[in-house]
Amino acid sequence: DASIYTRKTNDLILDRPLDPSTGYTVTATNVGEIKSDGLEADLGVNWFRPSEEGDFRWSTNLNFTAYETTVEDLGLDTDQVVYSGFNNLGNAAIEGEPLGVFFGSRVARDDNDNLLVGADGNYLTDADDGIIGDPNPDWVANLINTLSFKNFTLGFQWNYTQGGDVYSLTAATLLGRGLAGETANREDTYILPGLAPDGSQNDIAINNSSYYFSNIFTGPSELQVWDATTIRLQEASLSYSLPGKFLDKTPFGALTFTVSGQNLWYKAVNFPDSINFDPNVSGTGVGNGFGFDFLAGPSARRYGFSVKASF
Image (cartoon, rainbow, N blue to C red; front, side, top):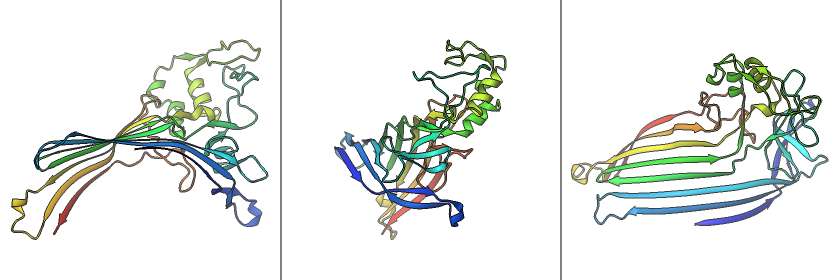
């Protein structure tokens, strides 16, 4: 099954800042218009069709989702609202842009979009904040397999998220403080790509500390944004159903035991190799914000055991 959709809605609810003198700091406002374009597809395959009860069976289900939500009109006296996080670093609703883009400090650029490097060899910060990332993924796919033989059933689900950005203070801190493997060679030198103050290609070498501390850690917020592409073993379970002959003299019609686990393994493929970072975090708490990590812990790995009985 597959579907392509376009939706428009006027239900864009944002938290707008208020003057603290009013006694409040934010107000939820239903404003504006957003447009969503997307594609959803679902494919199921039975690889083996058993002829008898208990024979081996294997089924696979693949679902795919891709969408983009664009702010078309805020219905306000401004063309942008930072509705989560901080005014100088947060999720923003900006007319003509995807909903939730990161708004914050960025590397200074010239009129041709070349990065600008100062006389000390470090990136310069633009005087004006701007868009520094988009947390919305390009697409998401889930692959679910179920295998059964006799009284055993094994199921597992892989998740793949392509694209999207995450602002990670955890990764920036580990690099800036020299706690990640990438910083181990203290004698490394770096030349940042961009233009020097005289307009020539930058050739000023900086040391390991300046590169990671003065740029990746304490530089413009744009430098703390990573691509959040992630592969994840979302769930796995193993079940055993007692044969009927063992239940004949019991009140049970069926009895199944299951061990399971969720969020068992992940790899954010575009993060530094030595940092096992989980992009599935929420540093802005409960609300509409997403894609920010302010030294947040990773999402939990969970294990469970269950018994299912019918009478």
